[in-house]
Image: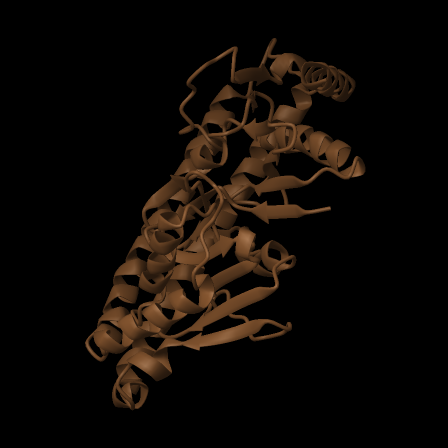
Amino acid sequence: MKQLIYFASAHTSDGYRDLIETNLTDIKYIFLIEGATTEQRSACIASFFEKWRSLGEEIELLLNSVDHNRFAGVINRRLSCAIIDRIQHLSYPIKALGKAEHLINLSANVTEKNRTDKDETLKLYLSKEQAIKQAHDAFNLGLKIHDDLEEIYINAMDFNKADKVAEDLIEEIFAERFSDHSASVQYQRFLGASTANGVVDYVDQLTEQLSKRYLIKGRAGSGKSTLLRKIVAEAKERNYHLEIYHCGFDPDSLDMVIIRELGMAIFDSTAPHQYEPSRHGDQIVDLYQTTISPGTDQKYHETIAHLTKLYRRQIQKGVAHLNEARNYNLKLEKIEQQYFDVALFDQQVGVFLSQVEALLS
C-alpha cells in the first residue's frame, strides 16, 4: 500500500502559506470539517485514515503545520475523496458548495450554555495568534540573514558551469522520453515544516518507492532551487505529472521534485534535511564542488560561521514561538473539553463516515 505523508501548509518566513488547492483540483468529493477543536478535527480525519488504510487504499496524509502529530487532512485519489480540516486551510477557495465541497460542522457535540470563560478563551486565542506572528517575524529575520549568506556563494559561482550541470542532468533524467499524459499536472506541497517540535520532513517516506534519488549538495545560494526549477520546466514540457515540494522556511524556493512515472526524485540534501546516499540508485549532485570557486569556504570562514550562527538562532526562536502557540492551543482545548460530549462526538463521526461511504458507493 502506498501512503504519502506531507505538509500542505507551513509557517514560513513569509507568514502562513497554504498550498492545499493544487492537491484538490481533481478531487470530486471534498469534505471541509470545521467546529470543535483541533484535536477533535484531527481525530475525525484519523477515523477516515484508519478506515481506508485497513482496506489497503493508497492514501495521502496531510499534517498539521504546528503540531505534526495531528492530522490536517486525508486524500483518497482512487475514490476521489478528501477530508480536510477547514480551519487549517481557510485559504482554500470553495467553488461549488454542495456539489464538490461539503461543509461538515463538528460542533454539535459542544454545549455553549452558561459559559463563564469567554474572556479567558479570547485572551488565550489572542496570545496564540501573537506567538504565531512572532514565529513568522523570527523566520523572516532568519531569511534576511540567510540572504547575506547566499550572497557570498552567488558571487563565487560560475554560472556557465551551473548551466552545464543542469543540462547534463536533464539529459540523464529524461533522455528522449515523454509522458503519455496530454498535459502536465503539478501538486504543490512542502518538503518539511518548522513545527512546535522542530523542523520535520518525510523525505524517506515520500521517496521509498522510487528507484532513483538525486541528492543535491551545496551551500546557500549555490543554485539548488534554480536547478530544481529547470527540472520542473523540462518535465512540464514533456507532460509529466509532478510533485513539487517547496521549502518550509522560504516558500518561494524549491526543495524537492518527484516524477513518479520515472521513479525519480531530486531534492536538496542539505541541512535541515540532510541525507546521505543509503540506497541503491542514490546519486549525489555536488553543486559546491562543480560551480563554486575553490577555497570560498576558507576565504570567508569567519563571516560564514557568524551568519550561520545568527541564522540558526532565529530558526530556534521561531520554533520556540510555535511551541508557545501550541501550548496556548492546548489550554484552549482543555477549556473546550468541559463542554465536550465524547459519546455524541463519536456518534457524529460515525454518522459522517456512513454518509461518505454511502455517497461514494
